[in-house]
Image (cartoon, rainbow, N blue to C red; front, side, top):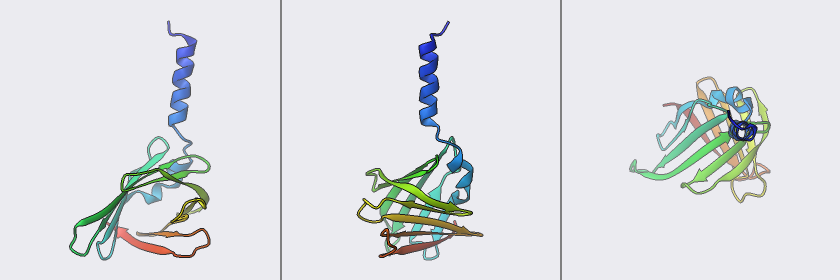
Length: 146
């Protein structure tokens, strides 16, 4: 017979690994492969699984060679947390600031740049905008499905 302590430990461990389904269904619109029209940037997001979304992005130079990559993970919950690993280093955490249908904003005012990340989906297109907390130095990528 298993010890109650072992059973409680297993339950506690599984609870720590599985964020609320909030990010699962609420952000599934991000799922897929997204690319800019000039093919210089690609972003890929997994289907939500167990409260997580996993993503990566690739930036290409003018010759088509890979010049930068970033890995990312969104941890479900209320609020969700966007974890960025630029060049494989990190994480830099950005907490969900707001969400509406097909748009989500993550923010971390203590981070140097960016301090705000906004994803928006409109039909078969998606955009990502990074900026300072006040909206300054904004950069936007407009995507189409790969």
